Structure formats: structure tokens, C-alpha cells
Image (cartoon, rainbow, N blue to C red; front, side, top):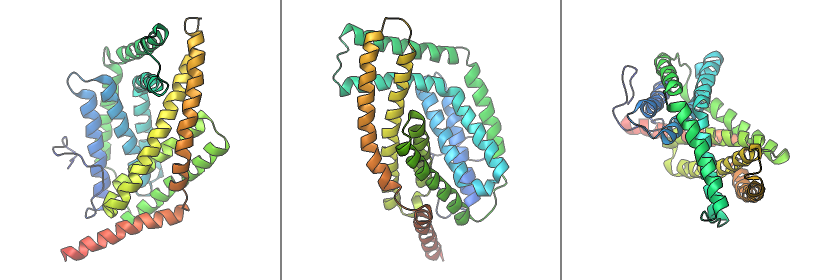
Length: 317
């Protein structure tokens, strides 16, 4: 378990224990994820794209924790910490985004059997890789950005150890879980009625928050919660692939000159075809996950938690 004075010594487990006080669990898991960020950003000879990706994932997990504990934290503290971890992740975003463009191109190459032995495809991929390497080098050459983020995260660790968490666990979790589920339903409605890169991306963010929260509450009923978490993860992956393709398309559109003009046009057509396929696969899954009313969904999930907790307490008596 994490402690405020030092790094985590044991393997990290991103879930709340059924038998631990809510405040303790929230603080423990948050500290574990902070230690993960620091390990990624301050380790010896890191693979920067992978390290940044893992650090950003931990930052998003923490923002899901904040949303679950929002009522316990209070509005001002929640807003301060949510903005902090959002901004910390954004400082590292260019490395991940440039790597994602290469990955998106490779997925298109596989899906549409593009031969990288073809000079034009090879040159385009090399262009994407050079852009990624340049961004990575600029951000990590003197470690200024990474050092700044790591320093900020260390300060945040001290704040987390002093969070004045209050309130009863189940009622607090119910409010946070219901709010995230409701925002996901609204984001899905907007994405389907006003489809755009931005609306689908906003929906994906809400899906990821809910995914992380279901992982936190896994002990309520591991079988059922794992099934829901897996579905949310699948949905998040589909939407993430869609967003990466959209970002690749925007990057290609911004390229000036005639060097890749013709091939970029062809690739943009493939981007739109693949995005359509991904969204057609994602939509039915999203509709099934978000078919319940927020109150009904929240009552069901928290009922699992209460039953498991009461059973555990009875067993210990």
C-alpha cells in the first residue's frame, strides 16, 4: 500500500478494497497512481513514448477517482485537483499524440493492405516518424518539461496525503458514479445527433471515466463488474482508434507543399472509411452500456457494493 512518506513497495491494484474505509481507499489508490507517474517520468533511461503514455494513463485514472470522490472532496478542492492533473497530462500530450499518428497509419496499412515497400507509402510513414522523433527530442532533450511535470506531481503527492475527505462512502460514490454515467449518456446523445471529432472525443472521455470507476468498484461483484469493465474498455479502444485516425487526418491536411498532396488525399479517404467502420461497431455497444437511466444504473452498481460489504462484515463477526 502507498504511504505519504515514500513510494509504493507492493504491486499496485487499481480498485477499492471492500473492507477499507472510503477515505483511506481513495487516498491509497490515488497515491499509487501518483507513484506510477513518478516512476515513469524519473526512471533511468526511459522509453519516453511508452513512459509518457503510462504516465498519462495514470493521470486519467486519478481524474476518474476525483469524480468518484467529488462530494467528499468538496467543489473547490475537486476543481483544483482535476485541473491540475488535466494540465499535467496535457504538458506531455504532444509525445503521445505524435506516436498515435504513426500507430494510426500502421493500422490503416494493415486494414487496407497498403504496401510499405511502395515508395510513397514508405516516405509518408517516415515523415510521420520524423515528426514524432523531433517532438520527443524537443520535449526530452534537456528534460525541462518532464522535470517540471515530475516536480509538480511530487507536490501533488503531498497534497493528496492531506486531502480532507469527508462523508459516507456509499452515498458519496453514488453521487459521483451517477454524475459520470449521466454525462456519458448526454455525451452519447450529442455525438450521435451532432457527430463531429470533438463530440465523439468528449464521449470517449466519459467512457474512460466510467471504465476506471467500474474497475475501482470491482470488489462489489468481480464477475459482473469485470464484464462491464471489459465492455467499456472495448468501447474506449474503438473510440480511441477513431480519434487517432481523425488526428492523423488533421495532421495530413495541415501538411504544405505538393510532396504528399496526392497520397494524403487517398489516405484521407481511407481514414474516413475506417472511422465509419469503427463508429458503426462502437455505437451499438455504447447504446447497450448506456441504456439504463442514471439512477437505475447507480443503484444497481452500488447494490453490488453494499451486498458484498455486508457479507464481508458478517463473515468477520
